[in-house]
Length: 184
Image 1 (cartoon, rainbow, N blue to C red):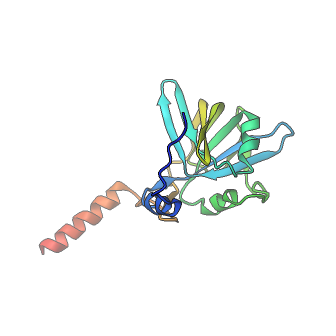
Image 2 (tube, rainbow, N blue to C red):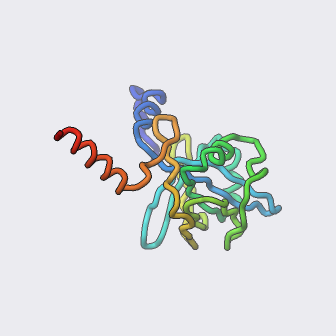
Image 3 (cartoon, one colour):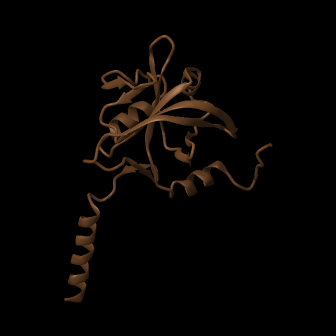
């Protein structure tokens, strides 16, 4: 089915509106047949189904990494931690040697698992659908591991990186402190 277009909506307006939606950041990695690692940073990552376990991410058709990941057929989603902004920037740049100086180990499916990630999710590519100027890549989850509990997620909001407050208890303490100041 063709995707409907609405000429009254510009891409700049859409980008501006969507900048108000906070997302996490992940790096999708794969190992090519010749043994070279490939990866790309994405914001458009989501759980699709719990039964069966499926995820999706949406790479741009202009990506030079996506065709290589697609050809590999297996990939890993590396969910980035709040202290991995530099790593995210490295994987967001096209053409560079993104793995130079990046510690990783091969996952069970061979895809690079990045050191320091909050979690890794290994997948088999099940489908790649057309989504306008992006693809919608569906992956069947084959393995997953939560690695860190000492950090929050790397967030992207209004074209900037951010982080959650340190803990809900510190947030509650701050709110209680503010309440007691206003009552005094």
